[in-house]
Length: 101
Image 1 (cartoon, helix red, strand yellow):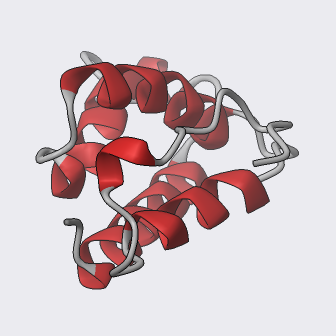
Image 2: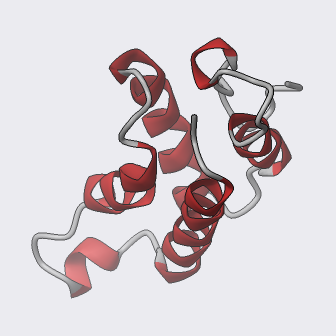
């Protein structure tokens, strides 16, 4: 079971990463990669199965790098993860920013 504090932490981390991201950041910060932000964002969800985390990586990268991306499916997904009646392994991860889940 994923704790609500963990999912809220993920939301905060994605928001911070998206706010601080810009397309030429790697030029101003040599060695920077959006992958390091994605890893940091998903760290609180390390207890999820690897296959679920793999699907989330692409979603989080898109949410960081695309200012106009729809974040609502991701937020709903995180909310469902922390619901006490749902086992996290049975919650479908969003496939992208337009996922209606």
